[in-house]
Length: 434
Image (cartoon, rainbow, N blue to C red; front, side):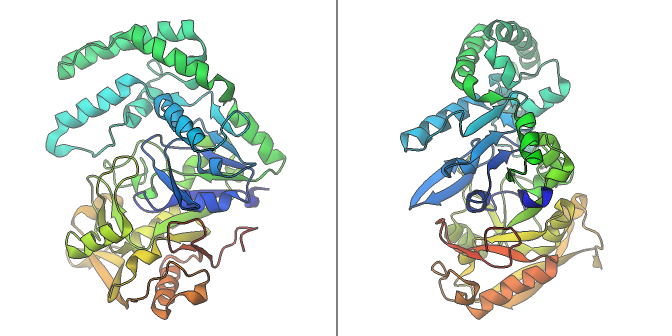
């Protein structure tokens, strides 16, 4: 049962190419489930030369016969979701209750969340966390606070919603005026807007946890689609420069409403190099022409924000930590084609602090570490047309093999370009792909 399910999670600081891998795996799954994060995620899929950027809607929506689920662990922004659904429909993608379900228990990103996000970041000035200002953190904070939370089910009751919005908006207006001297929000206008959203999404709102547990019992295959990356996990990442939810495989059961035994095989996503957006430690960062070259070749700009990403060499020490934490059975290696043309490529194999090696990975100690690098031969050939491992240059094959050795997992899939077809099936253990 559980071994047939698949969880796809990022092992770096997000932006690892999860969209393409989820799309590839979704062809052998019945359900695709988002279990964490919100509209701060950006998953890109290229089908037939057309690029689709998805933020809240699971990537399985581009496959016929797949039921897509926005789980209870997602910070659901109906403004973004409805716009995204309309855009997909305009491009000929069919979306409705038959292939998209939204958990009634998913917490809703409200206008005060986005406002608080922006006001808080502005006040922090040089100490910014580097959020996307999409209101995700404040939404999860209200989820924990409970009395100021709104869930998807609340949007379906216009009368109850108005009472709740008035009460919460009064408290938020008082707080924002005191902390930021902000103008008050119009509670009735917000209630009208979100009641209308409720009418639009009502056919898709469901008890998704019960549906997924029945799928587990009936052995319908589920793919759990992660957001962000393990190094941004609220508990296990480079705190406080992290996201606000549990984005490792550990977050799947609570974020989807399934038992831990249902997680199945974990596929860890990793770029052939490292990137990160916003503030926080980044040991292998190359703030130089190497980093610029990686950014230009990899088009390393945020799908959601458009912000340029910080770029650097692959960090195998961080990858090993994240793979161990997530229980990854294999990894999918993305964007290997970006490294074509480098005379040499480097991999960080460990860290030192004060000249002494650091034995155990500790996200709290990354600010002042020095990296131990291993240098490997690069390759000049462009590899976008490669469709088998044997098509890759010897140096690229050696690079993949070394990654497998350093993190102790097989590389199951290798992406060599943005198109759906530009994927090499290598040492995967996912049934149906080989």
